[in-house]
Length: 211
Image (cartoon, rainbow, N blue to C red; front, side, top):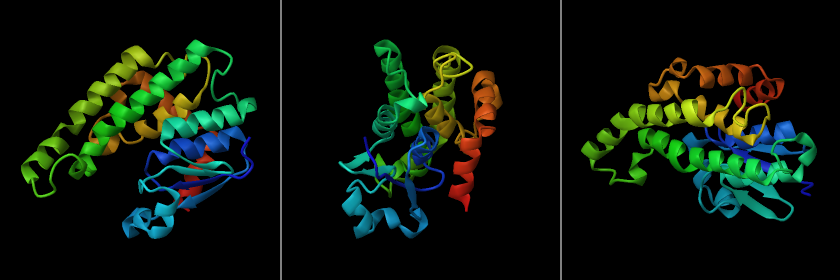
């Protein structure tokens, strides 16, 4: 089990899910904030931690972990007493990984087309960039329609069992307003967002990120 954990994060990013997982786990950890406006994710110091130049990055006694699904599973398995994953049920654990992978590989990418379209097209191709940005409300709506109708069992992603998937869903649901998508179109997602907002662990982490 990891005994020394340091999470590198930036406010407003998907690193919130990992930050929440650490807080819910009860693990001793520290959180190191990066200022993306100052390009600290591209600094030589951070690139030695994570050559990808992105967050989250979790420094453990055994090395550095990156990518949200991997960090979420590591925290859940390292601190099983917190009950953040159904470690006793292979099928349900696979459902957690399925959901988290969908958020990472599809929903996050849809969102990223708005602000980081240069990853997919040339920066000077303004027409393509604008077309990509314009499509974000549509693709995010399509993704959350699927989540609402087929994936979010309610009250939590797995039904009655809380998991890291709820932390990740909450993180990305917070982006909908900025993507010009009304969360109220999705009653189950909106209710999930409201209940997560009320959790003391969530309030604590958000306050620390905004300090």
